[in-house]
Length: 119
Image (tube, rainbow, N blue to C red; front, side, top):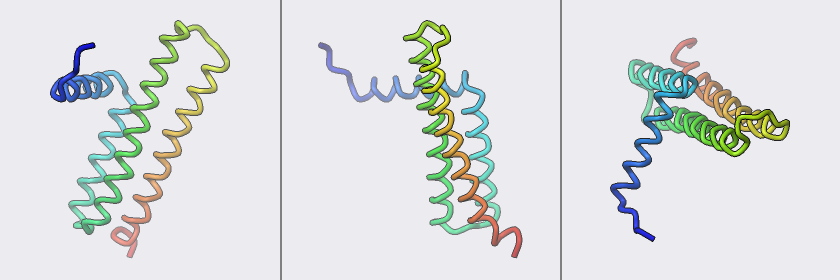
């Protein structure tokens, strides 16, 4: 077995992220909204710790979306894109996890930005 170099490991990871961004609309939406929120945070000059919390919430949503994509592609490959009720349930559960992460991020954003917008 050939040992993989650390550089190749990073290369493969970047290729995977590149593919996901180019092919997954929802991932692009999460990235754009996240970038907008971070920019908004800079414009409002929110504290470093609040920016870090926002960044963590945004990254959590993006990571969930990437895992969702990987799971869906894997299930489609294994199942041959045929409909199967169990595959649907797994896909729905993972999509629900992304939704839950996104709602969490929205709530965190509202908590952080509320004083800057409404006080």
